[in-house]
Image: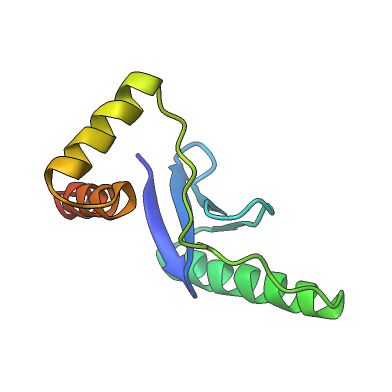
Length: 112
């Protein structure tokens, strides 16, 4: 079973390897690969913080800005039929497609 952890807006997927008796995680919301591991939750949290901080420092040392965890932009690929249905649903509610989709996603994510 996987869980998530967050630090400075970076969200990691965390799993436990029972055979190795080790937690391991990877930041999900970046193209760059950031991984970390620990034998306890306390160790894992520290490893997450250290890995993210190291990533930010590494980028700074290269004169680059670290990748932002989320830009707020989402590109969706839909079938033409689903795109049409979404446009109709948005228009019926007198909303732009963007505003309508935002509301739908907000409702869906509140349910957990």
